[in-house]
Length: 229
Image 1 (tube, rainbow, N blue to C red):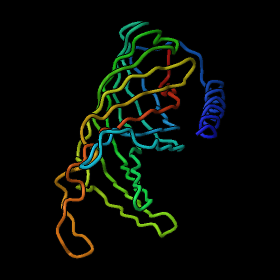
Image 2 (image 1 turned 180 degrees about the vertical axis):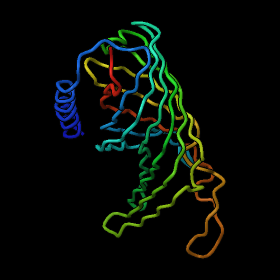
Image 3 (image 1 turned 90 degrees about the horizontal axis):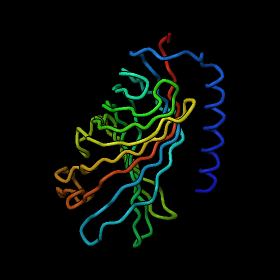
C-alpha cells in the first residue's frame, strides 16, 4: 500500500503540473464544460453476510484514467452547480479463510452526478458535495483458491447487481486542477434475488443474505474545456 500511495502522489503531481502549464489562465464564464479525469480509484465496502459480522473489506486500488464530462454553472465567484456524465470501475474484494481463497467483484458503470461547489470557484479552490446515480453495464467476478487456477465470470448488463446504484459524495477541487472525492453507495452492491445454477445443477441464490455498501475514494484532474472570458 505504501508503494501505491507514493506512486499515486508522484503521478498525480506530475500530471497536474503538466496540465496546469497547458491551461490558459482566464477568468471563468458562468456556463462552461470541464473534462473530469479520475486517475486513481480506491474502493472498499462494508460487508455483512450470514455467519459473519459487518466488516470493512480489503481495499481495491485501480490506477487507470476514466473520462467524465461536467457541465458547470457558476452563480458568482463563490457558488456554483454542476452535473455531467462519467464512467467508473468500482467493486470490492472478499477473503475466505477455509479454504484460503479470494473473490474480486467489480462493475463498470456510467452515471451522472448533481453537485454544488462552494468556495473560490473562479480560481479553482472549492468544496464539492452532492448526489448521483450510476448504471452498471459490465460485471466481472474473479475467484481463486491459493495455489490453484483462477475462475472468471463476465457479463454485460448483468442481473447480479442492481441496475441503478445511487450515491452521495463530498470532495474538494484544489488549485490548480486537482480533485479528490469520497463517494458512498448505501444500496446493496449485489442482487440478493439473483438465481444461478451450481456445479451439481441445483438452483441457488449465491448472494442471498449479502449486504454490501460500497465506499470509493477518487483522485484526478478537472480541466476546463470551453473557452473562458
